[in-house]
Amino acid sequence: MPILRSYYQDVYRSPVVRLDGYSGRHGLASSMLAYLDFGGATGTAKDGLAETMLAFATERGALQPGMPVVEASSGSFGAALAVSCATTGHPCILVVPSNLPIARRQRLQDLGTKIVVCSSGGRRAMDRIAQETAERYHGYFTHYFANDDNPEYHRRVTGPQILKAAGDSIDAIVIGVGSGGTVTGVAEYIKAWNSMIRIVAVEPAECAAISGGFIGQHGIAGIGPGFVPENYNPYVVDTVLTVTTADAERASKEVLLCDGIPACTSGGATLAAAVQRQLNRALKHVYPLPLFSLLNIDRDTYGTMLEELCRNSPKEFQKAVTPGRWKDRTRQDRCSL
Image (cartoon, rainbow, N blue to C red):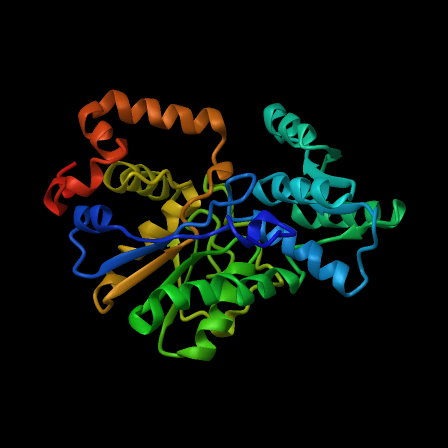
């Protein structure tokens, strides 16, 4: 057995599963596939991205050994970057908003990061402080909302994995838009192979910057930054759909009950978008991603959601999550939950 430089080379696999339970619950004529990206250290879709972005920067000489790495992030990418920095010998500095919950800030600090608090402004103010911090400490600002290394990772990894798993049998790929790297990288790769596959971008209905709608507060962590990110390429996106926070939360609960997959709210948003009538009418297969990203849900919130599901439908929940019993259940059983 060869000795690997990183466990991502062997362990980091993203399975593709068919969501028969969720599809049946909504009476979809088309089948639905899900790309589950959760194999990294933090259990989110950002682990491979963070490590690869550091590798790209090192290869071109922008990131030198021991150089601090700076990013404006308090979510899953920040946590993944902290782990990647720790394993590669780089100090990690994260710029976070002043309203970040104490528990989340403590968790980032536990991962070895230095926290810089931005007391005013939004994303642009945080990016400005991150740039200034990188210059002050002679560090490297990853700037993953505007860094082509972000979509390049998805051109090299996510897109090829999807095409290898599903080939040309899919009609559309549904992707939530946060930094814009996933939708751009996947779409550019897929469109180069088959321009007939439609790309559907998803954003919160309460914060619809891409589709030119209302911009406000929402509860779908991981997507909907409130502006159009520089990484976003509109020329490879065929349709932009909006999903309310309530619908995203409902979808994440339904896929847990029907298919035993604990999706975050951003994953729930892609599922809710996939079942919208205007998308479902003409499609054979719908391919929502990313679906599995637990860090995008606060641990206490996720625990509360599980407690609620167990309390309201304990028998059905037990059937959905008990290992070994899923394969014995029929499609009708799953749809009746």
